[in-house]
Image 1 (cartoon, rainbow, N blue to C red):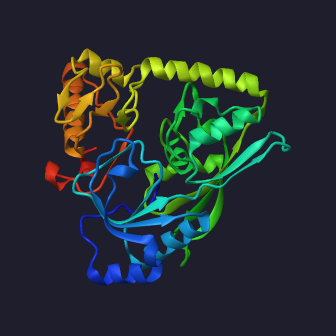
Image 2 (image 1 turned 90 degrees about the vertical axis):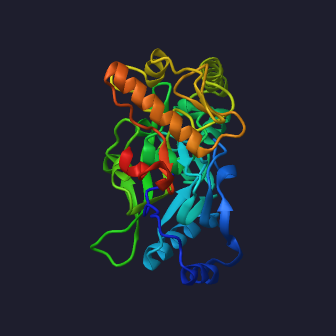
Length: 332
């Protein structure tokens, strides 16, 4: 997940590809399928896929792409994301910047992590050290970067409750070059599954984050992890999905509304609205992004007709959706 220049429909020119190849060499792949990099295992190819392995590489690649006017998207864990079967025009930066450092002596204890580090893995590493406060995140498959942008949350916790500061590469009209900045919590302006970064795409990239934790014991923190794991297994379906499809509307639950509309278990092609939890859409093995998109449309239409509620996507739609009449970014 990222807040970058949203890729447009124009395919990269031969000259742009040559420029990228000269700059990034073997780290760059052309016309590479993105399906295997997403939790739902669907999606078409990227014009360019470039892996970055550190925050310095991420910052450098983003700065170059901004300078060259090449649209890009940063792909982390690939959850909460539906990529069009037609693929993504521009460049996709595969974020593998994963360094993590705990500071158990600070008050409160903290963990610093690069934006490509897995949020759930960090929570489990904290538990081994007897550090609590991040138990809610242990089952979340996304990365720190995506969690910062989307204010990821579960079990009553969220990033707004843990974030101390984020290192952001920011491009502003007042400065010729993008700047690495330390953003405090307040500047993120967090809301439910949203932030100032998510609401204002195109100028910022999350490089790393510092989270505050709390002292506890390994046994106590692990007990909480086990409790949440049991709850997830009981309420959330296994299989390839994007996570929660829609945000919960105020005072209600998206899954309840979809189920009450009679759509639980509905299948289009290889995609199905889960029979266990109706806010999860499952790839049964051969789903396409178009199948999933059609289920999204059907769920929103039926819930609106029956309950007068307009469901808002929690996932992000990425890529070229012209085959679906008009831009998904515009529709949602």
